[in-house]
Amino acid sequence: MVKIYKYEIEPYGISKHVDRFVGVLKAGWQGNKLYAWCLIGDKRIKESEMTFYSLPTGYEFYYDSDMHYLDSIQDGDYVWHIFFAVNIDECDRKKH
Image 1 (cartoon, helix red, strand yellow):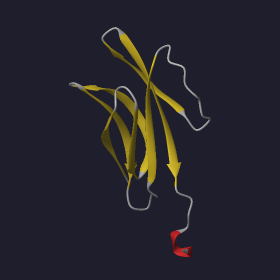
Image 2: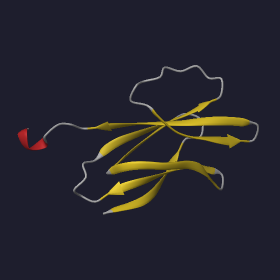
Image 3: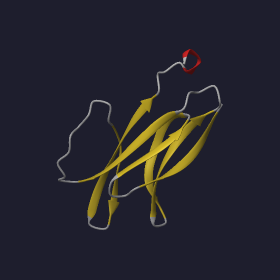
């Protein structure tokens, strides 16, 4: 089973969240806050850390192969491009 949750993300920078992420659906404004809507699994899904990057048009940045494009959002005259990366802890905690 999954649920859809929203996570507030920084409109001009990097945001990190930890949960049982299954997928990322959309980014967008709700009121004056920027959110990402994600699919979250039940306790059978391993926790992971999701990093969101909000990057303005024309900004030079290092692209990592783990980064995935999510959406582009407009803020007045500016357009921000939202990317995300997932960091899954591959450690088997029973062996430590």
